[in-house]
Length: 436
Image 1 (tube, rainbow, N blue to C red):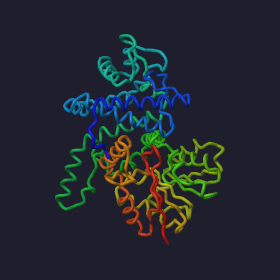
Image 2: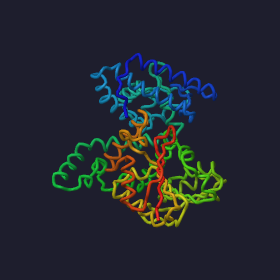
Image 3: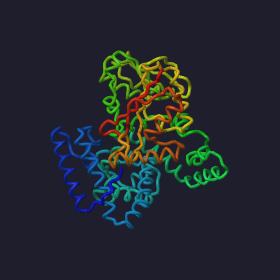
Image 4: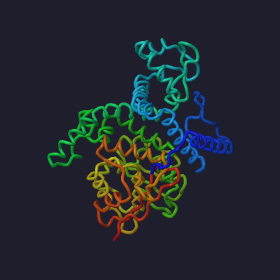
């Protein structure tokens, strides 16, 4: 949980210096370049040691607290409500209108040239770009000239990150604009004695659909491609790295076993496990568009160990008796009754006391819950996803007891045998078996 002790400007400054010293020492020991605001800087934080991860978390937490103290409460509230929204809208606008493409990766161009290429009003473009520069997107080395910064250049260097930004800003901004309306509809259902979670989400209202956001995102081709890239990019972030899945479960103990990755997108997690554990075989199941993309991206040397299968995870699984069913960041996307349906599609195919169900998902922090206790930054991440799941999908992140209750509701024989959170991971690995 959040620290009860009140930090001071001086104590936080000491934390910042201490964390930076650790970061510099870790970077020097591996020959890794330090972060930079210039377009030539490294795009991602290194997947370094536990000491590096902890130092980064300590630094970022202290910076957040310093910012609040430096603003004082009145200024902090205004900063959170005004700048937070405007930052998100501005970044979404830059991506939507392809501003990053109109600026050369190396060199400069003029505001007028960018406006002409993007068919935008020059004055409006200039206003948005100069605000974006206060967020360290782009730079103006001379009046009227624009060049890339590290953040804007990332949109050209990393298409998956760009897709994720577009997905988040285009969907969430529109959906959250209907949040008040959706909440009032849920209140009305509750007053009528009905299930308030059966009402429309803000996403449903914004996009005039009764589909779940995941179903909607994977049906339309353009949305499906953006969604796949978004999920793939998410796996590259250190808290969601596939390496946590590799290190967090004893895959080698399965020998030449068979792993079924349910909802496995392009199979990148299975590729990571396969590289570390030579004996395993894998089946990656997902919607047809994801399967097609996975086949294209699959390294040729793993084609005899990783196969792809189009499958809807609400239907009974076609694979009988694998050693592991893997569900990675799946169940938190769905309301309780849908999550139960996903589990019930697997249970008949599980061999009692043998087949492992491995769920890689967040275990929501609980007070005095050793399985859910998290430092501030990972906790902020899991709290933010919990809110997002609730508002967009009528779903939620779960505590240990809620995970156990979910499994029991799906089938009383489904029993949790272990929960662990690898160091630096936002996700925990929940291992369950069918007792028989």
